[in-house]
Length: 360
Image (cartoon, rainbow, N blue to C red; front, side, top):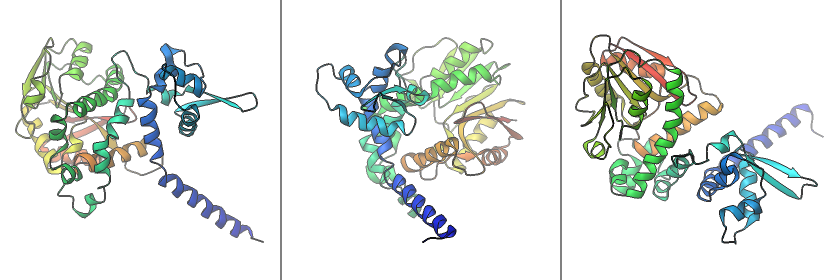
């Protein structure tokens, strides 16, 4: 018979084995999410906002009006994702039937009026081409001078995407699906653009985010959307916005304030210093450099926020740059000081993105 200490030891061992089994099977989660998104299950349940609990057979009838399909396998996927709070399970009567509705997490997978959702971000992360790269994560430890993506495909991700229109479109829509909700929240709560006359958006793609900022702040007279020439040549004409092509490693257009969202994570520390120095030189006295990036906490814990940020950091390391990375606020502050900025202030209005203001 085990004594108290023995029982505690056995419980700890059991919990440890359960934990490692969960981690070993963790791939079931994103792959099941992929399946749900490809099958448009969230849209079928949401159906214009009803979110009425549906059985797997009822969901199947909506997503496969032509008939067929396996309701039992769909239920297996729904049950597993219910354990991750993507769906809410409603057990009917004696438990012989289960119905499912969307939780707040599940609602992020619903397609909006622009055809966007966080589901595109999930799909983009788990394309067949990227899954091949994921098997090379250990190589970022063995040799960080060569990126896993380059080892597999012989070129950088953005170059590869440019030759594959379907991948490029998915990446663009995935970034928009994540960025648009953040930008709406940011513009409701952040007043850092007040008083700016000329705003430069570095790495602004086709100008969507800059357009939102200018629509909110009519006092901004000119927005400069700065990105690679092959990107801005596809940008539409937008009132008060000038599209400028160039390389941020070479120069940055001048403005009262410079805005940069989700860009520096794919650059090394030395490259970040170079870019930030160019930003410093492009600003007038008392000009402001505004970064929106995932910023790591100083301490590591098991909160959803910390895990989301650290998991995204590994994604950057594996897929984009072995020496690109997420950084802490203090690490950004030190990079800013090396570029000439006097200080940095963090504005925390979102659980994933942080706004960092650098002052000249």
